[in-house]
Figure 1 (cartoon, rainbow, N blue to C red):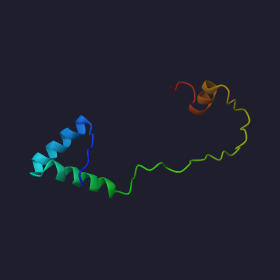
Figure 2: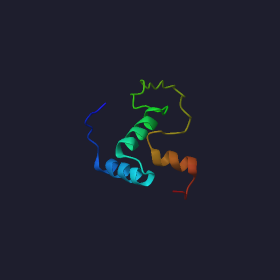
Figure 3: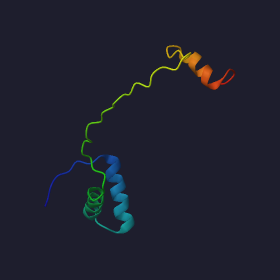
Figure 4: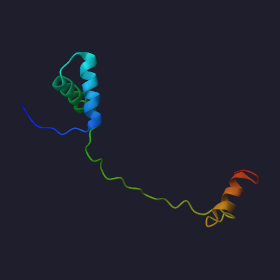
Length: 81
């Protein structure tokens, strides 16, 4: 099948280099790499929805989550960071 395809300049350069290196036609190299890409398990399909189900872990007595610097100091100790 004959079709028109617009490729980015960097892709064309890589394909031309590959064609020269392997002594293949540009068309053969394009088809080879398209087949490789289409036969991989990773596809460009949009992944399904991702949902976060938060859990309330409660509060720790004596820890103020509103003052991050104090919290880090409690966790890491003085003199760190």
